[in-house]
Length: 366
Image 1 (cartoon, rainbow, N blue to C red):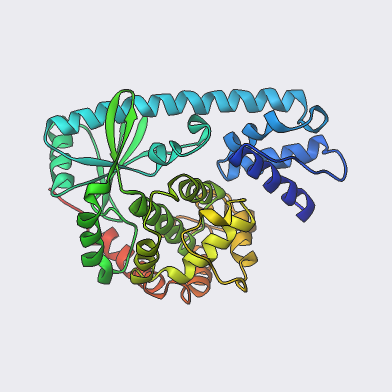
Image 2: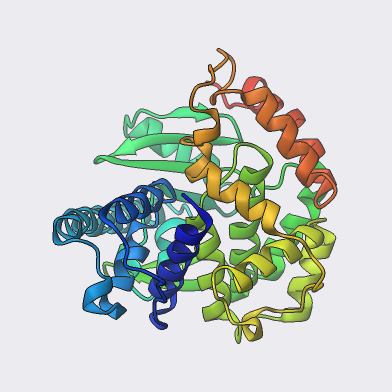
């Protein structure tokens, strides 16, 4: 996709994300142009957001009717999938609570609630973290109820429940540096009283406090940037969170959290992308970022890597080594390490060590 069409893509994304604005075209888009926009929207799992922009376009600016119909069918599928996820969340949350297990919904449908059209945000799976010894209790619950699961790298487990992929996480945040664990646990205690409640199918579901939700969503983005990349959907999550909770958070405290966890330099990069590329109003940021930051390189990486780097066209013809999940994995991991080590050194350095430990030695076993 050339730069002009990419600019149009981001115009459409901003219109869908915020529900305002107009599309400026030097010339009408061709069927081929719209096909490329559709393909990139799928690669970044934001086809629902681009679809939401159509209501604000002029008739002459809309994609061909055949593509609109295809797009509408896909969005209908997204809506049905999200409704199914909501039913499963409500059912599992109720079941866990009955066993005195206190789950907290992470990312996914919890973040979707901050969007203009929540059921148009694509959620890949359901993520739960737990208070106290809830992770171990939930693991025992799965065994007692003969729900097949597998322990995975990253101090987690996963399973399928009624056609929906579920993940349980021992750790609330995707930090890899073990030096932050005590501080992060202290934060969970300090912000417990600010946890929020989201009603899903009339079931009250717990979410983290807004400051910790931002920390969770943003460190998740960084974790994947350090590895194989991540798509625009998660950047949209961060933008919508800031937009909605800006007046609810302690801005000074949040900046201090970013500083103490060692990611403030990278947060500045993120903030600039959210403002200049996704259209988040600067007034919604908790603190200013340095104006001389260069972020085009990071946006380019996000653009090409797409959803978790699975469809990065730059490596389409490369072979996947047996021990790695993506083509050209060693090269990609080394390049991303060099890109981000100066912005979040502890995380970049700790990732390969802790990931290897969690993969081979850190799994639970019966």
